[in-house]
Image (cartoon, rainbow, N blue to C red; front, side, top):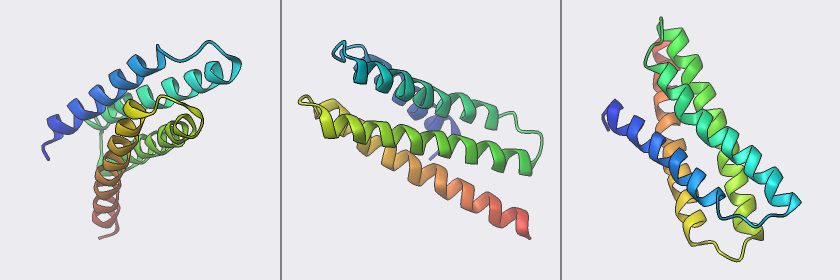
Length: 118
């Protein structure tokens, strides 16, 4: 996968989360979930954008790690939504996409840390 393809997927993932959060019920629990999932989901792509301007391999590895952490948090909130929501279709798709993206970012992270240990 090319870097720009991953950037596009992360961007689209954030946009899709935003669109799905807009239709949440107006209840206290969904307000909390909305805030948390929006913060983490949009942070994934933003941190990956910072990866593109990394000043060293160590900086690159650190920023990839942050992006992966934010993605893991996003996946957690998506799983919460899927556990409590009646309307799951779009959220199940987002859960699968988050899992795929975690594998991609995780593989990049492992590769970078191996490279740094040489």
